[in-house]
Length: 469
Ligand SMILES: Cc1cc2nc3c(=O)[nH]c(=O)nc-3n(C[C@H](O)[C@H](O)[C@H](O)COP(=O)(O)OP(=O)(O)OC[C@H]3O[C@@H](n4cnc5c(N)ncnc54)[C@H](O)[C@@H]3O)c2cc1C
Image (tube, rainbow, N blue to C red; front, side):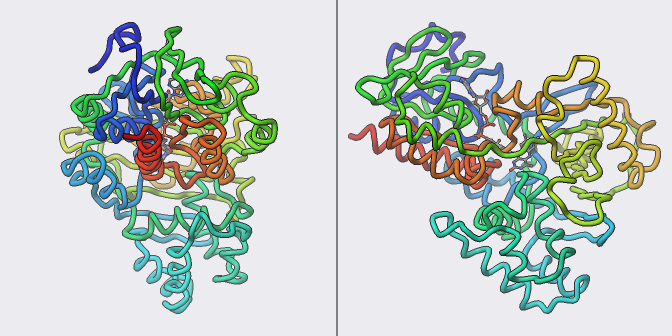
């Protein structure tokens, strides 16, 4: 049932899920499907977390529906519905434009292999061997090799190939050359397995379907209510305090940021000093800034690409990609009827790697001036692909790492939660506090649309086993 307030909730549930991102919703659905009584508590007025969209002047802007791997189809079918799975469709026009190369690919392994051959003069076996190694990556194996070493192993002395194969993952997740190769290899091969995909109908349709399916499975949902505390009894999870009310639950699944869950929501001293220290060392992922551009009604723009990676940096370099003002951009083009068959407007969402510190602690006027500079940098670059774009736009809006932090509660606006060490720390959290589980946005791998939803399903299985028969 969709509850009007926390006061309508039962006193006790088998499980409480904190947060209704893709991970939290999937966890709640799986637990309810397993016959558990479940309450999902979401701090915002809407479900979805980072999987959000908003409307302005007849436009719809998707914040995080840019691309996901084909695997999302299976995840929807297995945990949600065949109808949602059927709405997963390829997004085949991925274009790169930078001083080292200009090309277009479907982002599928076979097409990358073609590109490596035709554009970079590398034999097909080189691409095939590389993708075979990516597919074998296992996150429980040794993670000492860095992404840079991994790429150098297959393509020595080829910074252009490194850029081709890393840049897209780097934009989205902030993965850099010194991050573990296993993370890069898993994410890249998930995407490249069958190319990039999207959801036909848009984020709004998806969220309303997920909400309805979740309610039909018997879960209770309360929105606009923050969990301020996870309560323990004899060291085990015993419930949460949500909107000032204690709700008893033997299992608590948190979809909030891993570090906030462990360090802010638990009572002091409930974790061992060693584990607390380990948690404090878990690095957050990088953040993103975005510029949302709505094109005037009836105005057609050239068919540039589905996603365009445009950079004026001479080579890929994580630091320079985060620098301000940005010189490297990822654009998602939403043409009329593109992902929403009935929607006749055009929207462009520009995403850029961003440093939280650049945006933190600015006076309101400085913050707004900096947002204007960011929009100007976007338009200067985009002009190369859509001439006169500034005059064609009727809506321009900028989101910064501070915006992300405010809406999804992720510390420092981390777009993918925690980096790789967060993956193991999350698993250990359940051993430290029996009955407490964390899902979504961890280790980069269990993040993104696919990783977060799968993480919710996996964690729900563990919580269900914990609750027992
Ligand atoms: C700008 C941007 C673009 C992206 N683009 C893509 C993309 O193209 N493809 C892709 O696969 N991924 C993308 N991602 C990443 C992807 O959107 C996220 O990894 C994924 O949606 C995270 O899901 P999650 O389950 O971890 O939950 P989150 O989205 O992190 O949501 C967590 C929820 O928990 C709630 N919450 C937290 N604490 C509390 C509390 N104490 N009480 C109550 N509620 C609480 C929050 O309000 C939030 O709703 C993007 C992310 C960003 C920021």
